[in-house]
Amino acid sequence: MPPIPLVSVGNITAGGSGKTPFVIWLVRQMQAHGIKPVVLCRGDGGRTHDATLLTDTCLVADVGDEACLLFESCDCPVIVGRDRVAGSRMAADLGEVLILDDGFQYRQLQRQCDIVLVPAEGVGNGHMIPAGPLREPVTALARADLVVRTGGGPVVPLGGGRQWYWRVVGGGLRQSSGPVSPPPGRAWAVSGIARPGRFIESLQRQRIEIVGQTLFPDHYAFTAGDVGSVSAHGLPVVTTGKDAVKLLPIWPQHLPLWVLDIEGEGESGLFEAIMACLHLHER
Image 1 (cartoon, rainbow, N blue to C red):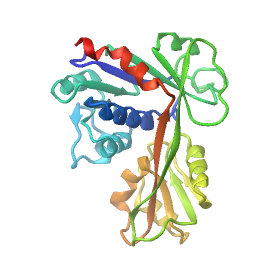
Image 2 (cartoon, one colour):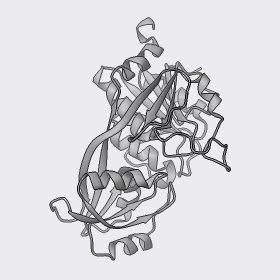
Image 3 (spheres, helix red, strand yellow):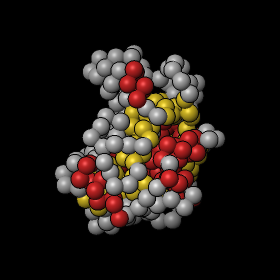
């Protein structure tokens, strides 16, 4: 059992359900209510196996892109490691609530609140990997405390009980490299995430003309050759926060690089429903 109450944020589909931005939203909600959260994640894309508390000196190659983005965005302790039981023990003196990122299938840790994110567009053909996108059958949702539909657009019904809603509502462009300049009207998009279409749609909502795009696999490790290729188009490059933590260490300082920050919004009552599962007032 973890030393502090645990909230798990997970999914039943492979990638792209919005776990990382949801965790960032949940952390900020807790902080706004005077609660001190700690984030625990696996560290996908990194080499580190032992439980590690992130610091400013941690490298993306060691702890993974999502862990670095969480560390930069959350202003709270972030622990990474394949052995998340060991990682949970590290949280004892670091905060009041442990948020387990991508934890629905990691059942070795007892949780007070099990949140499962399901994209608004549903679960595809309803088949398990590799025939479809599902990590578990849809019936696994029965063990969740809250099912949260994420993303925009029409919501494909899943059936079952009460479902909550969370979506990205905005954000803006932030310049991370290059001479200070106004936001671009035309740009080249670069991403290595599970659902790049959402990224492109968000850029278009910013009224940016996407002249072209270079898409890489999720958790892709960028190289200097990649930087040279995407910058050769002579356009400002726009990327995601998750990709920026990997690109910036190898990005030439004289070239413009823009990051699309995102902000999430939960349905009224969602945060309160999460907190009701924790019973913090009883501790």
